[in-house]
Image 1: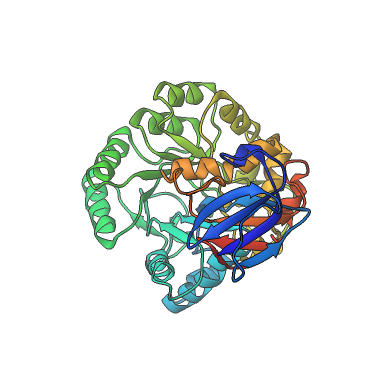
Image 2: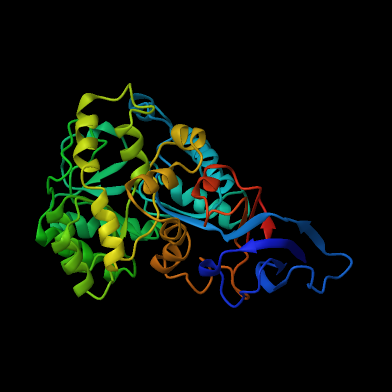
Length: 396
């Protein structure tokens, strides 16, 4: 038994308790009890950790990252071996755990590294967050796809899409990642440029549904977002340039489509932080996307389910703890909106809200403890948590 004593709880991230500072009792991999501070019935052999003045939050979920991106140096990425990707991926995954993310969704990688790391974590061979992975990104031909060797699998017809979906399903992926528009990061890429067709996108949706999977679609641009909403795609990645017509279409589909903004690279490159070596074409794309970031807040407040993503490199992510919180604050999200996006919203999007996303008796004991109250001051999230627990075991 493990007891977190005298923690502060945030009401909208806690279920079944509202009586001030609390003791959280964890038994095995579950939350066994939440009681007023000092009231837990604790056996003598229990581990009791005192966290007075600290706040307990649910373990967070990042739904858009790439274990592939260990560095901002694109040439170095292309020169890496499979072993390099694996060892770098282990370090990157554990950086997410250090920052309080007990669940991550790997939205495309090389050499099936995400699959290998997911299975190794699940088997207890290595430490790390819970991983859901897409394998390779499926993409029609687009300018700059060769920027990232081994990341993309090119598919240019409905038949090729079906074949690729079947292949990835056979490997054991958790979902399919597909590129519907040009990429900000691709050299000379065109965000906003539609690179797929309605026929291809609907073929993809049919294929993933038949396989019992779902699709996460890369979208920078209104036209692609509208197609995704019409098709009932599960997650729209980035959702840049979303507008009122897109929002209405998503809501008319009864909210079955969620959006996963990724503000970290957009904001930090807009600010001129850590991007001096990147090509000019990428900075031009970033400014095009940044101009529409406030529309993401409009979508969220209209009722579009919004998750958390970062899409950063390991190098930047590790040196800028919690940067996505600062980026989302800049475009207008409230502390409550951000904290929900990083926790319960992500759990809902993954269909895991009965197990993750809030602190509740009976749920998995994924809990982080931070120094301060992020509901009052979100900059608390730009420091490492003082403790991270995944399924009742202390990881940090």
